[in-house]
Length: 427
Picture (spheres, rainbow, N blue to C red):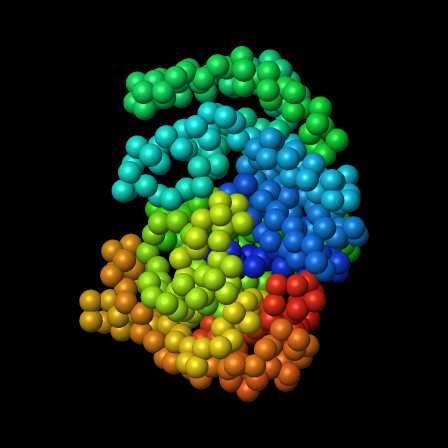
């Protein structure tokens, strides 16, 4: 059985948790392959709402094995807090697997993340301050700490002391901060070792064996396509690869085993943090989208910047990910608008551009070119089939599908687990 990739097609916060949860009952493994606790998924089950930051959404499906793979950076304190929170609500977390090769976020990563952002001032990237970027930097610089290092105290000490020899110089001499104690970090992280041990596995082996046995593996990305460190709006991006290619390196599953790429599209567009956003609204419509859509970061609580749907970005996501299916979320939020603008192209210094500009400069200068579609006022949250949607809502979905370049196979018409219209089979 081939693997499936599920990822965000915009700047994140598209509703991946809802989509993963919908598929969770039909798949055997749900795998987080990149990012850390800078990503957040909200899943609504009945009258219960779950905010997940680091754990895969499949943790809520009893038949599913959730996996934190090698491409993720893990803050143990956040992980244990999230596990304990779910256990207190009666959720079984014993099935969780964590890659021995996943890298760890340490206190010096979070400290450096925060002080660097403050130092940059107006030039700041807009990170979450969770230490994700510094942890990935250490990984690439080959000085990172992996989960497996917790089980060898001598290696852990060697790595922490080596890291702080340099980082303390930066903290003290550049940022005028106190030194961090290597002994304190080592003591704290050795305490995490026994708590992590039951979850640690060779997840690459486990996942490939599962595929050999005909089981279904769903690879879940955090953030979104336009936040990819290679393919996003650099430098206003995350520090990893949430695009489909990252699913292979972040999990150890080869590309020939991936059969379908499902991308999540919000029926409008949002973004958290700094960076260009051509369709961003600064008027009453933007405030209305934020309020009705509850557009506040799951992890940070920050207001999300809101704007109309951007078909240029959707086409780009289709291309770089090889999207086979879109899951359109939050269509219900648009109920009540008489007319709904959709960005079909950009004006860049007087030139009409229908694909994402090549340079950062051009993208910063891009102005949206809109087509306006008729809206609807009927409540769509109870619709179970595409045909039950108002005609104008159907037309809106079909227009987005044509503009985006891949079929829309499912539509979210409300936040609940059962408030989804499935048009085509996603498995």
